[in-house]
Length: 387
Image (cartoon, rainbow, N blue to C red; front, side, top):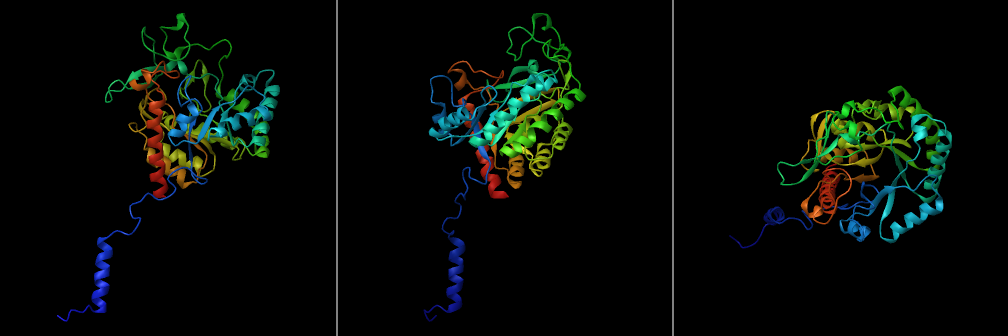
């Protein structure tokens, strides 16, 4: 052996070394690791950082969340007040991306005074556009089936609270429920509860007529203002709720909605939990609406369903029937860039020990939101790397 390396031997040795030693940066997390201009934005509600006396904005930002949503002021919204609200969040390092608007029951029920309410909605949307609020969310319930909610307990995670829904629910003493039920109604199944005097009973035809009237007036104004509308589906999606049918209680209803006025401003809040509650595949449904650019807000949560529409449990985001990674991947694939809310946290002892938890029976607080946010960001990072 002459002790000299041939050119071929040198190349072979360099190749073996390259295979044996990973390249600089290999295995590192690629960008974007957090939300950016071209990614979805994980968001929390403004109060999700904790109860009275805490700096909710600080706690939200400690989770790496920079976007928030909330309930809007009474109509009509005023540009000055909205800007002040957005500036307060901005001063805390948060961006307001979605406000819920309400207070137009005459428009929902087709009663006298609806035109005046619609004009207030339009004025509010114009104000939102002027201050740069991108999304205005709303509901269109004849009646929301809250009376069917009750608290359950997770069998695998000791003491964790679930939120159950049962269309055949009959209330029993000592159990935590949601919604108002009069004493004379306490022994009646939820499905048989009568209409409320202030609401009445309404058919699908009535409800489609009222929302069609609303959308034809409002959507063109939203387009001009640069604002997107997001209609939340009926949740729970009970077939009949105190005598009324529900237009957004089926995927076919969601599809019909976006055809009434064809515009990105006429979109939905895509809720993968509600999608599964109706027995539908949230990945397929997400693809349908995202490919048409009609998802203007997202609720990211999981459920276990015993009977579609009628009996299910809202569970931790990682233990339900939805493939949350594939849902997120679909959103990334179709370049969804607006807010994702990992809502409906589950009840944990840590949060219970710090005081009463409001909201749904079996619902949780800040510690549970921390879990929801961490899981959601992991899904987003994985989806960004896989598309």
